[in-house]
Length: 422
Image (cartoon, rainbow, N blue to C red; front, top):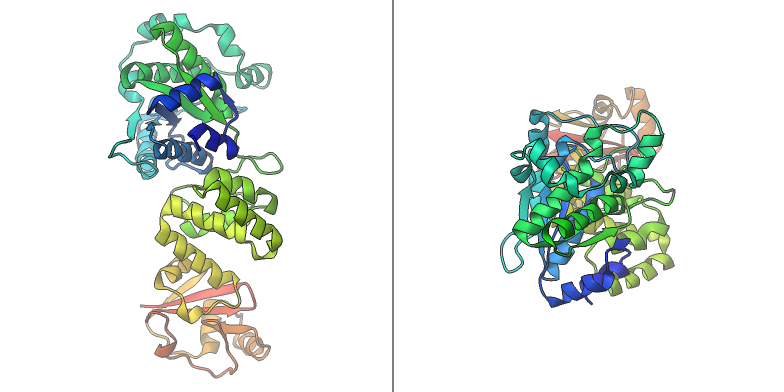
């Protein structure tokens, strides 16, 4: 299946300029394309995923992707999809954010080989250009009518405090990026989310006017939940970051375990590299037994593997099973999974076990008093490494240590505490 047909089957085409012309050009041979990512934070987030994965899909199809870090445009801020002005970044903040996202941009593409990708920063061609030169050479080719026709600009002009000239000029800077890449990197296609359509088309028009060349645009629908909100946060309001420092691989994994059944097929199509046939078979199996959450678990495993690597995905899945599957054999859990758990549940460091289970329960905070601990044990609600504790005078020994280091206590179904013996 050709790349456009595959994208369409996955629901990843919202708009294109001249579809037949684009299909014809892609069929002729490798095309250089780009997608931009502004460093508005020190990590990319789930909203950037489709862009990153789309570049990778094109690369796998033999095309030449450019991942563009918006070191210049990030200082201005894109008004698309926003109802208020962004806070402008200073040089220090911009450098810090770029330091965070550049390694993430590198993770998704291959930078060697026949279809080698490039990672560029638009500061390289923007910072040195003077305002008068920019207005003379670029501004005269862009009409105000074209700029104010953009939905995000119209809405900001009619509501609230309006839009500053700084943000208003953003689309012209993005158009200049496309022009520069077309002229210097033979870039013929820009891809982005549907909210970028006006910006991208402005670049297409600028290339036609300045270079007398044709260029192409392709956008995908924004990734939204059934209620129309973006897939930017978990149900608890936590932003789904791609950085393991800002969101652990375990919590990233959990963010996808909880998606609605009705979203499983769409998310598997748009956010994984599983084949269309495999996805249809998986969805059928999922729909036959939705309580097993096969679709969500596959989605979580695939996405965590893409973003954090297969080792982290396996550990996240194992840690999830420990904390949520009552039939999980805790004694067999890997050390990596326990390390994940140590960052997700309360933990206490000990020099040695020494004390009986009653004291450990009180010291850990799982029980408020020795009396409370005895009652919980007698009621059958205390577990150590997945095994119910039957005697109040039980004293754990070194043989209970998992990987010579960990003891996992549980009260009831959801209260956990990890003891770490140093």
